[in-house]
Length: 204
Image 1 (cartoon, one colour):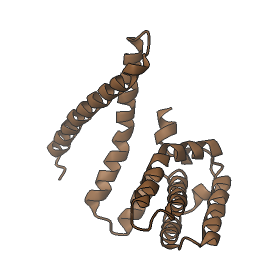
Image 2 (cartoon, one colour):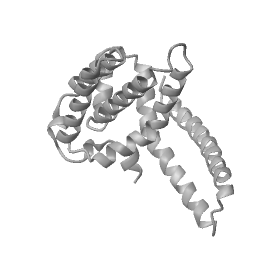
Image 3 (spheres, one colour):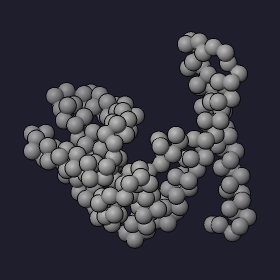
């Protein structure tokens, strides 16, 4: 379950999209995102073309639509936040639907690429284009230990559930905040131990 939510869907079927070079997919994604951000509000043709291209990529990659919609649902608060922030900008009250559409298309592009490309291939492309090695190492460690933190959170959730016979609604948010706080403390302690172990092995 953890791998389903965090991992990449490229571990599924071998498709035409998954076999494409990572550099090509990242380049096309960057062009789509840049074009969508810079497109004027009335460029409906561009938005429709991008949506059609993404739909074709999803179909060719055999990515379940439910899988994509779940990811978009998890990230939709970010889209709504960007649209709401635009409302408070001078002259932005009439542009919030365009901002929401642009944000959703960009998110769909990122989700499609990230779930049809191994993360290690993405790091290789970043290394090839001279991205700082420290940033690449940080991204690699974040990706690796994201699974560790997710497993730790799952263990804490199971332990909490096994000790509670009822789950009162009033205490749900308080319990969740407690779990998040404990997870932050454990993550900080684990990060210190990992950093000490890496330094002991000569990492700089």
